[in-house]
Image (tube, rainbow over all chains, first blue to last red; front, side):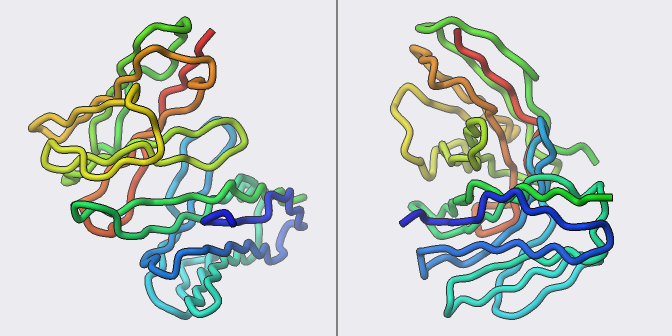
Length: 114
Length: 113
């Protein structure tokens, strides 16, 4: 079982619709959860972080965390063509010597159709 | 406020050669992590540096080594390059060793021929 799993897509949604991106993780010791957006040929950009169960909203983005189900999701409301990118789910857990390690999924490619 | 910077942007090397990549963290950040991202994959953790010491290492061979300087900048060295080392190398910085948000630089695209 992979540590962080995402549907690779592509996920296609019409402009103005809600895009729903999902992620599951295997390590129950994971403590922090992040969503990064990566445009083709660019580096990942942090768009959301969530640390406790429930929902966290920031503009058009809502992150949802359910630790019991080991499930994280990202909702993008009123999707725009500029949201077309690969979305990476990342999970942080404590490593050695007080460090924390980020583990990424392979990413879900989102296409927003005008 | 300067973000994370990396150099060079692109690099082409031959098998067996050695390469050094550089990273300067975001202002106020003292922890640097390095990642390798192959095409179509998510970033893979190489190692993390804090207080000039390697604190955590991912599943990478000893050919991959690093260093952190007193000004918190960092280098990634790869020896005896293999074709499979071709990838985007990403540096991320964070404000401390804890479970804080990590911010990525633009990356260095390494091609090994």
